[in-house]
Length: 212
Image (cartoon, rainbow, N blue to C red; front, top):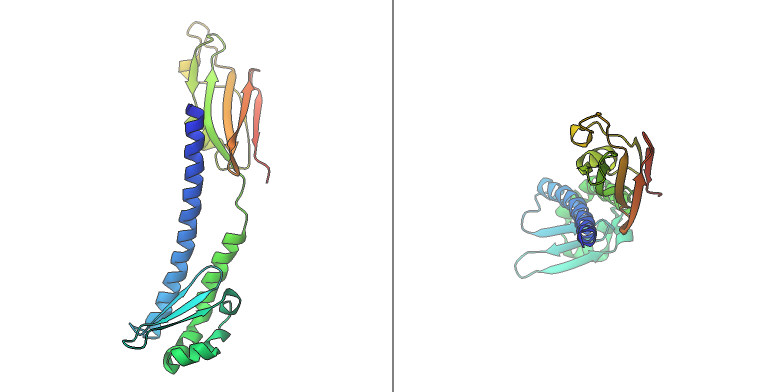
């Protein structure tokens, strides 16, 4: 049950992260357009919006003259749409020419955001749980999840030795350190598929990997 809860939490977290990243890209585009509108003294006459695909919407806000022009993504990837008949009819010449001169700066942000969106996310390690077991006591375990996360989480591959010098896992009479490592991890692109690793050899090297 705890594993299922952890997997659900990871799945939700991954989706939230993707939404937040998309929101951040859109915010950068909005900021670039806001800057252009300020330079061109657009004020409350018009509102320009664009998304990562390049689609542009120009809304006319003048009292009694509300209107909207939508430019598809292919045309919005350049600045030639400012000569579009609908744009010319709905947007005043001074605003149209000024925004046209400022649009290359907006396009740079759109292009960068589009490249980030198209780039496949890396398939990285996510630690579910990690404990080192004591060799001298069958029920003695030291939780090492924070250590493992620091060492391996968000990497595509990770190797480390199965040993532990924590005093909690040493034989008080001999000072032997733990030699059993039990790791459960998932790959970010398959957050429901738990991959277990168990090593008992002294100094054994554990390898975690998430292929891209």
